[in-house]
Amino acid sequence: MIEQTKTGIEGLDDILNGGIVKNSTTLVSGNPGAGKSILCLQYIYNGVEQFDEKGIYLSFEEDEEDLREAAESIGFEKWGEFVDNGDIKIYDKQVLLRENDFTSSLDILLEELEEGDYDRLVLDSLAMFALFFENEKEKRTYLLKFTDILSDSGLTTLMTNEQGAVFPDTEIGLENYLTDGNIYLIQTPTENGVSRYVWVAKMRKQNIETDIYPMEIDAGGIKVHQNASAFSMMSEEESPI
Image (cartoon, rainbow, N blue to C red; front, side, top):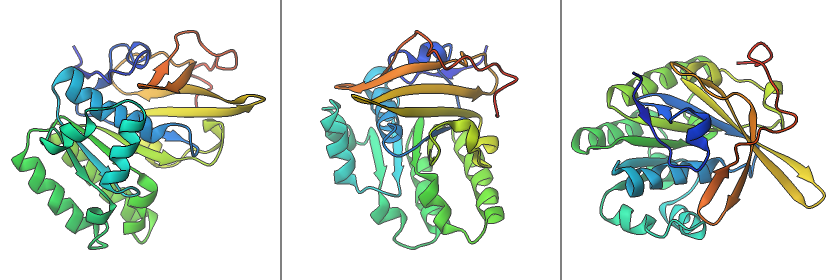
């Protein structure tokens, strides 16, 4: 049996057939405003509130207060309490970018992993993470080392990735192949605003539902609906991953 980590996100664990593979790294991709950070906040928050699993949130783009305000604005009222009591550990941009050196940031994190008992980790985002490195080869090498460290430390990790294209099959980066799972958040414009969808394109070691499913962001965060989208009938042969 494959051990799984439940996200606690309504509908998402169903299409994952139980949850994310434990100790894996999953890439969450989408264009700006698609809900990547909300999904990650929800993943960490649900871990503490629903499953008694502590989490680490690495944010290269926001500071700790911004994260707290974002979490509380969508209904995660105990976020501040969980941070204050150590159930959620935040490393924000002021800490991670202080030395302008990934090795220094990694040393800080490794010390925390040795002292704490954490189960979940979020890295938001890979676009900022990449600024530490001079070229793609160096970035790939460090990303592989980093994901190995996280897995060896017993962490189930989500990493966010900015995607310019609306549809994921038009823009596939190296990160998609280096991670264990790929979740795409898609938003398309409508007359009344936007329609939102989630597509789990890959999850190693387990069977998943690979249709595209409607989702919404409301009070309490993301909810995924079980009726597959009309434009979603992508077979595994058509999948670019």
